[in-house]
Length: 508
Image (cartoon, rainbow, N blue to C red; front, side, top):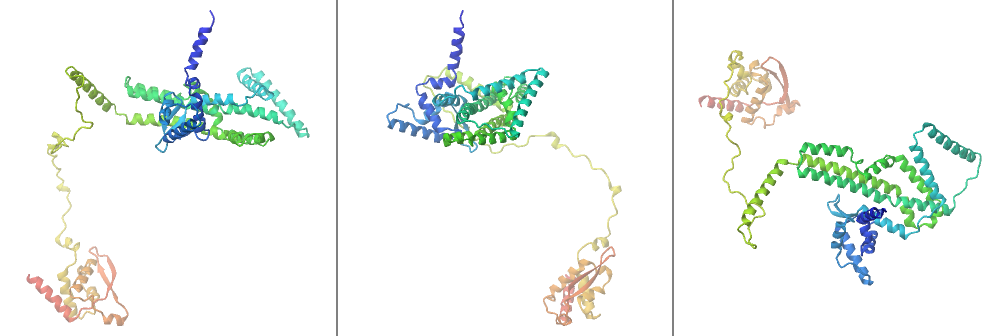
């Protein structure tokens, strides 16, 4: 029996892929033309509303020249293309929805571009690339140590001979324009495949993302089992799919900054050849953007992988199984009540239901419930009176109190009326040590304020050239401290007023 049945099944499977379904549709030329005009290597995503407007404009332009186009508007077409897996819609960093091409659409564009331009034919450049690649892979595949050493020695000898020839003034054969153009065509074939390759890796990671999240939400297995599987898939994230394994192998080279810098220099050297003058400005700019294309592709894949890890971590931390089960139980009860109601309800019966539950009218909502432990008597206090220090005496407490105003008034009246004190400071310095505490200075200032002695200009002090005097204080512990206080002099009227104040307070 021939293999035609198996081949037919394989071809059917290929035509079921979104790439060939896009090329097989009636409006395939229009769809690909829109994708080619709206997206580019530098513009990988387009804001959703903007793409809808662009497609509407394309439809209007084509109708004006008599072209046959679909009858839907731009928004409906974009939604249809998204359902056909040609467009991917996501939320960007700015919070707005945007479209990007899937790997299937990129592959279709690549096929059309390859068929619409001059394809590289068999040439010395292409055969040399094949031979060099086969030799390199054969060296890696051969485990024979002697054979690998022989190949390396041969390569070293060839390169050494060429270096010696150039060092002795040997002629450097310049590459012809045709040879450079053939090599350029081979490179373009490889470079144009990179965007779709990177996109397939992104889609593979996104598919794994959705699968793991669905496993969490299904709750058909214990959460510990799902977590174990998540951690296992995280460890083998890039090696569990063919696209991931291919990217992981290439990533060793792609993350080598020195290699990429050397690649950029090599690209510049190629563009300095005279054949590059035959290329358009767009072709030269696209060719020189190869390193940026590689870096952008790597960053997109890593961003997708980091987003997967971040989303799953937040889901694990914030997922409340208890609330989900309560909601599931409530929905089950609603379905049960609905089944009972349907036994008697007519085909057009309705039920009035509020979208949001009403507010409960409660005068008071108990916030604390009865706790028997809150009503227990506290344990008895321990009797520590035997360790209590001796209580201070009344005199000791008075030494720590405020100024003795009555005693100070009597002392000032006596000092100025009988002893002939020159000033308040002079009278203070002649008092007993018990009356010369630092706080008594504040008492003296208060007494002087009561008889307006502070506001009075002291002509004698102005004449003497000094408006302050020293107050020698004695603390309760016997230590001494000197303070500079404004010089105050009490007149006979002031002493009489102070005496009257003390007389009035004694009779009160």
